[in-house]
Image 1 (cartoon, rainbow, N blue to C red):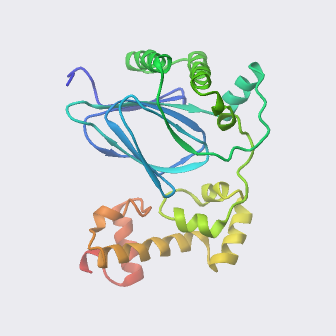
Image 2: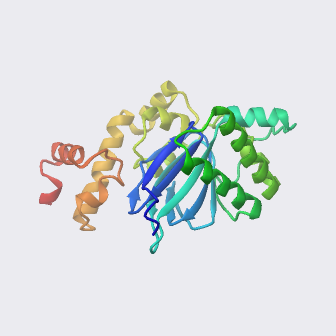
Image 3: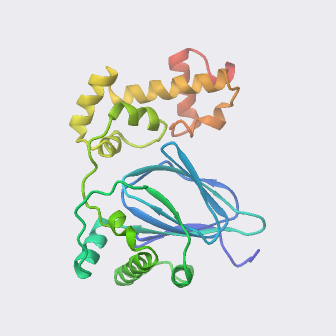
Length: 271
């Protein structure tokens, strides 16, 4: 292992996220508001989204569509550190790129929302060049960030021209089945406002529809649902509180214990 490599996670110009780690690390539950393109230099990233799971391995790329919920775990492999770079691709960047390159997409994208991609030599060379910028500097200029992001888009479309419809869909999320979505995604620790956006609703419309379906408020239902599932996992599956509280959307173990005792009258450890 290179002793000069320092463990760190840093964000540069709100465009690039660089991670270099020596030990396993659980990522935060995320609402992903923008497209993300990630490259794995070493180690692996395990990603859970909706009911699916995938593993991003060395020299692979991951493309994630905006407006997604995701959980991630970062793992060094063997004697190699974990190292990855993610590029955040905003709608503003995409609209400018589309105008400058005569790209017009009118149909909403309905395909895969998360893709594992095999980079070609050009994409690998691009990420190596980006790594040099990031490891040698604590910041990059807005101009350089724009240039490197546009370069990534050009290389991505060269690698797979069909990604045009994925990248340049500027339509708002359409209204989806709220009950089905919440039952699949209650365990993500994100705000009610973000749940509303993901179901294609305004906050007021989301709360109104939610009340009609579940006969209670979103915040109360989320807490009750998470605690009920926690009780089942502890009692029936014999899982430990420390193993499940994050996976069920609780911010910390103390909050989980307090809420659990208020609902069931006993602590999780006493079951």
